Length: 282
Image (cartoon, rainbow, N blue to C red; front, top):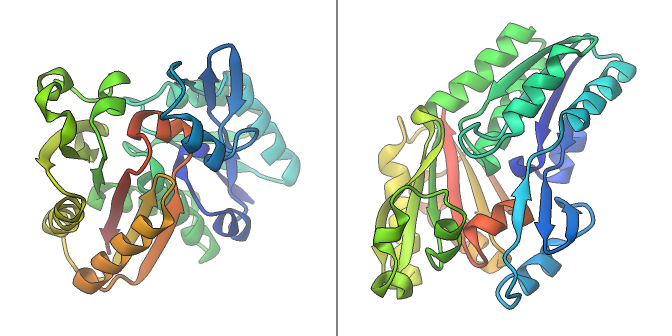
């Protein structure tokens, strides 16, 4: 048996995690003197209610080497003979390094993959590997399936404010966009070919313009608009997620659409009310 493991920033729906028996290693949220486990002992509803009003800004931390070591031991106990571990982009988190360090001492062979992505861009790669294995593929076939997704991946993100991503230091040159632009709504992208670095695309004045531009830019950057797999993430507002999915559906007619709420670790950097369209074409 070959086990797929990812981390909690993949935002995969519980039903898909269970269907493909995917292991999920959580990241951590540090808020003042309290430490929370991503999506475990703080709910998304609690997080998004507290974030805008708490004067203390939360921070995030990657899983420890031991967290991954335990996940690898558990997989071996399940009967895994090899493991494919797909993590959030190494340029965004130390998670990849923790997994790599744990893999060195694992009792089974572990293939650690830098997804160059986060949220469903990461989740789609774990899913592709799991689906390849379910179809009878080998480890190499599963790794190749994840690679093909990664190479075609596009992620566009709409934010209510630049404040959170700038505060977290994840957006290069963010300071120049602050000040008078705080009332504008930024659109950013994850540059997957360059490790998943976040860069600014443009600023919009209204929510409607921002959503339209996210769909338009996503469509333009896809290698093809045939057989599109679309992932929609929202920050505490399901109506926004559903509306974005409908807009993307009218333009792209995806073969698969996944709608999820992103978790606290991603919420630290995206803030409430944000949304993302991430996916690829076959």
